[in-house]
Length: 453
Image (cartoon, rainbow, N blue to C red; front, side, top):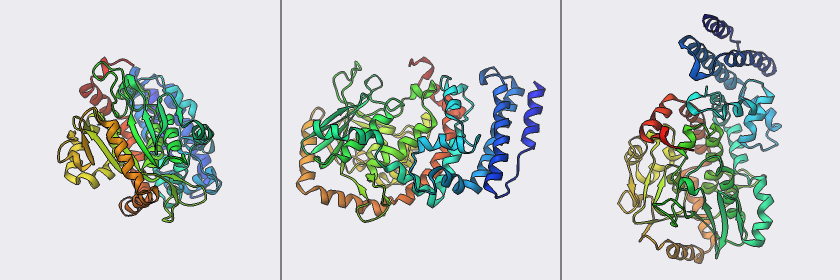
């Protein structure tokens, strides 16, 4: 017991200095971090540690994070340049995270190390993915590297381009947990996770982004619609429900990776906000830099958590009069995506803080709800309402609609503002995701111990 504590303390005291020479610092720190990982791996699993072993683990994790902060503060530009060939290659965040592990061993966990934690309950994990949060926070904090990474994440996925001809020909693609179909002048994206009331999790992330890409790239449609598919839950059987946000049961059981948050927020959510990037021009260029269309949401039943976050990227929101919105971030123990930045534009600061910090429910058919929802319709009339809204948008032409949304975005949320927000989000969400408070919140507010996968 004491041996482990002494070894951790001795290792922590030997932390290397920064010399400002990238390769020299990388080599020395890699050796240091690798030794730290070996010390952590030699300890019993988190639930079986005695107090001394728990203290040793905390020393190893804290020292490792502090030294990674120092290293990235000095060498983020050099690391990113090596990973992207001086920014001549676009590398998605979900790939970049693991290529960084090969470039500078120990800087971030390897794919194998993350997978080895994957079968553990969230409460049993050591939070090695926090190192990914530190990495991305520093990359995003720099205007040059951060903007380039934002650009990479706004490009269409390779999987989307591979399905585009099929979608053009058939007008529909079923991706399992998401689908996209052409309906008149609109391309409709359906969220499909019926067992969990169209919640978001690892099974929906890539599929939803591909659907968003295809809807945006479709040359026939002029507008995109986001809607939840029908579900088979006894309370809502056969009815459309919008989205219940992140799958809290999966979080509790350790089935949501940290990279899920970064990939989601910088990927399809931001694509709905500002369109798809072109590889040859910055997405922040004011001269038609992105490929985009107006987005309309049809909210039925509820838009909870991530579902509510989607609405903050929409150009028009149609909601059923019995639907409601919540951002229960405090009860979940996480940061609600970019809602902290976007919601105050709709509701003002005080209501936004009450919604995020105090769990204020916003019924769609109330003065507060109408700050987000543009039109309220009777339950059961959403299909007809969306047809009417689509006709209204397309009658004035897609050029006008897309041009107006760009004009709003230039003043409301330029890409650099998003980049700066994500630099904070990347680090803070990592610590939240592996905080004991998250587990306590889920057990208290979600009854997570009693819910089955």
